[in-house]
Length: 300
Image (cartoon, rainbow, N blue to C red; front, side):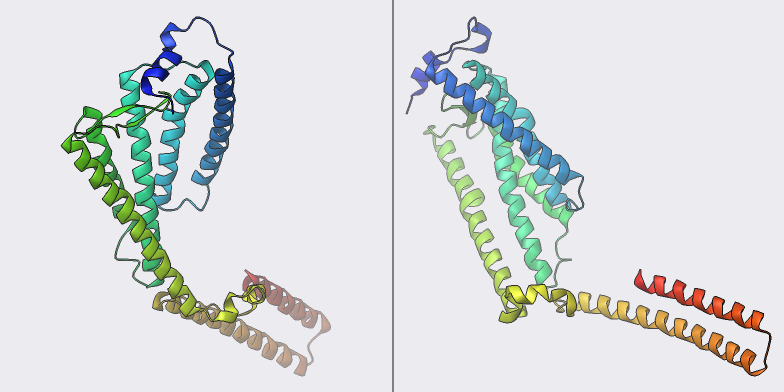
């Protein structure tokens, strides 16, 4: 691994750039910058499509998209420029901002994934009203800011260049007691506890789904016939919704049949009284039009 002292000699600052080097290491860095640029364009496009799609309906998913945008807009351009020119930015302010954004995005994504899994588990248990999406999003942002923002002011730890000094992050080499306490606390809360909750909640959700659905329901042949059978009632809310839909459908069909009976009796009385053929044909056309209109309404 190249040390920081060696990397400082290999990569001069951007303000001192005079000529562009074409050695093997710089060529590899430029190739890496092109790859990162293409990946960033694809990710940016996918985020835009997701942001304006129907899938992006709650604040947790919107926060995931915003976290990705922060990295793509603030951190990625600086890394691409440094790799393409083989020069470091040498800016302490930019290093603090980039390190803060990257670490904030990582902590935020971890907490958001946990909250999404918890909401999924609560919805399966029919307790989805216990925790709202807005409050979950606020908790995720608050915890992420509490862990990352103090480091901007060199409190507990600070952001320094890492690797080839193209990227900034936490100073993992700091041996002070406050820094050790911060890294231990962040490891327990952000990584260990988060992964434990994520693992437990997803295992429990999988067990609940397996208990609700029989084994033959999970086979591919059953999925092909899923449109022909009734959905399984997972919670009382879904059962009440289905019952209300059935009641509305029965009321509509009863009113349609009642209207048909009235028209039928009217036509029968006209036929028994031997009215003229013109009025009889007119009423039959009216009956057909009513039937077509009711048929179209029942389809929609």
